[in-house]
Length: 432
Image 1 (tube, helix red, strand yellow):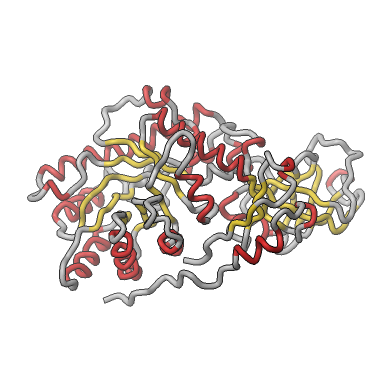
Image 2 (cartoon, one colour; image 1 turned 135 degrees about the vertical axis):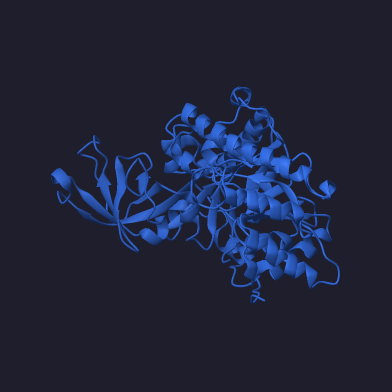
């Protein structure tokens, strides 16, 4: 038997109460830099917009919590003025356990948690404990599977219990991205279906896809094409699943109809009544839309053309610590800031650089661990300079990785003092 590991939740987190005593009502220009700032009003508006898109597309919605990893952000993702959902995806077991510890399952804010990685067999015991905890409050745990050996391990695990159960599982489908999942047209997929529908440890819930390649979209029509491809991939898998189900000795233990779960922030932004109407195939299940980056957004999302800068809810505030006239390419000036790869990550994107300064013709053009070099954006005014000691706010390329660096987020609200003072502190969950 593989050694089992446990999630060390509840440890090492800063105290929100202590942070609020120090920072509540503080002006943003008084914060130690680099500082990550989230506009709560924009965050909430983006969540409302996503609920509306899911409704228009005729799908249920599952919120991915991987970007912010906070109690406060989770509530905004699940409950908006347009709709409410109780289904989430988590990228780590730390997130799942912290949701439970925060009371979001016991108060029925959340009733359905999907662990969004094909199940690691050294975490099965931990997942089993989590399942017990969730089910005590009427909730459901779901998993992803994409290999027969995962199923066989679950069978051994359940066989060793006093009373065996069936794990509710999505089959992870590879729609061509080659991240996780199995391609529906392969012999490996046929083998997996055979194992799943004959297993005493599995209840097949549906088929799950994620178009990570949709970040290359440059327009709504391109994102719509990726969305349609996602649906076609999981729908083809579901059609094969129905054939396999027809041979099962106990069809009633599996979800009927299957759930076809698709989405990424770009494809979810393309979801609409028009794109639903354009789907060319009959569906072999009910649609579920999932996404995670959309409450905060970033330069990568802006590049898709599906959102503009005014919708981006996160930014990093940083200080200019030195200035270098004429040092840059073509004799342009450069500046040094106190935020580097740890503060922004090293993710870049089609727009270039690691982040753009809000309201100025500068970007983070080069980066080291704890400092960045601001360079001029092509075509910006040559006479625009930056003073040493001044502060700038920067939208980075990839909010999910940027947020991972910060022990807490300073929360502002554009409707309160123009978003220039701290109205809350969100403390994210860290670890795996």
